[in-house]
Image 1 (cartoon, one colour):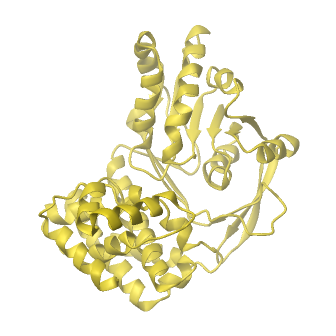
Image 2: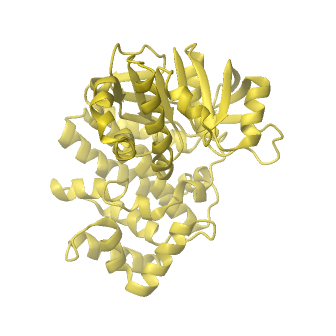
Image 3: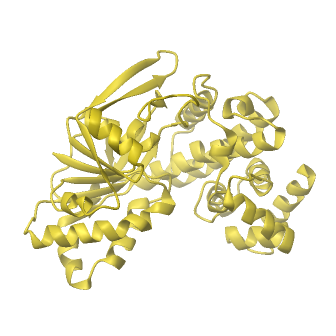
Length: 382
C-alpha cells in the first residue's frame, strides 16, 4: 500500500504520517518547506519524542517527500492507494486543484483501483469540505468516475503536537503527547476497509467528532483565551490556575450535557473523558503556548466550531451555559500581533461593538439572551 500525505509539519510527521509509516505503508510527504523536504529525502527517517510519564523516542523510517507545488503530486495521486492531509483548514482549498489534476491523470491511466482521501484536520467533516473544493476544480465529465472510484472519508483526529523546541538543530525532530485518536467514517470508503493500527473505524462519526470538538477543542480554546487574559504563557500554566480550571471544567461539563442528550453518551464515561483531557492539558512535558492554541479566533467563534456550536446545543436543549459564555467572552478579548484574525477581531469590535461583532461572526440571533450574556461577561472582563 502506498500513501501520499499533504503536510510535513509537526502534526503531519508526529501523528498521521507516523501512524501510516508504522503500519508499513510506503509514505510520501508533500510540503512546501524545502528544508524539511531535503532532510526527509536525504535521511528517509526522523525521530518522534513521545512525552509523558513514560517518555520515549521512536524512529519513523521508510519515508520520502515531494514539493506540493510540483507536478510530482499529479503522478503520485494517479498511483497511490491513500491520500491524507494535515495542512490546516485554510489550506485545503489550495491543494484541491492538484488533487483534481491527479484524479484526471488517474482516470486517463485507466487506474480504477479504489483511492481514499482523508483530511485529518482540526475541523468538522473536513474531507467533505475538501471534496467540494476538488469537485469544483474537477471537470464535470470526471465527476461520475470520481464518485465511483474515490472515497472521501471524514475523520476526527486528536493529538496535541506543540511547536518544536527553540534551539533544536534537527528540522525533522518532533514532540507529541502519548495520547492519540484517529477515528474515520467507515461508510465512506471505496473498496476494502484498511487495517491501520491507530485508525479506528466507526459508522457514527459525528458522535466522536462532536465529543472531541465539544470537549478537547472547547476546553483547549477556553484555557488559551482565559490564560492569555490572565497573563499566562502556556496551557499548563493556565490550567493550573484554579479560577481558569473551574471555568474550563464547567464549560466541558456544559457541552458534555449536550452530548449526553444528543448521543446518549454514558455520563460516567464522559466525566472520565473530561478528566483525562484536563490531565493532558497539565502535561509538564508539553510546552504549548496559549497563543498557538488561541490563534484564528474568528474561525473558532464561527457557528460550527468549538465555542458557538456547543452553546447552540445548550440553547437547543435548554441547558446551562454560563461557563461557555465566559469562554466566548474571553475569546472576544483575544489579541495577538502575530495573528491577522485577532487583529481583524479587534478592528470589528472597535468599529461595530461587541454584540454586533459576535452576531456577525457567530451567526447567533441579535436578540439572543446568549449574546447579551456574552456582552455582559466581556464587559466584566474588561
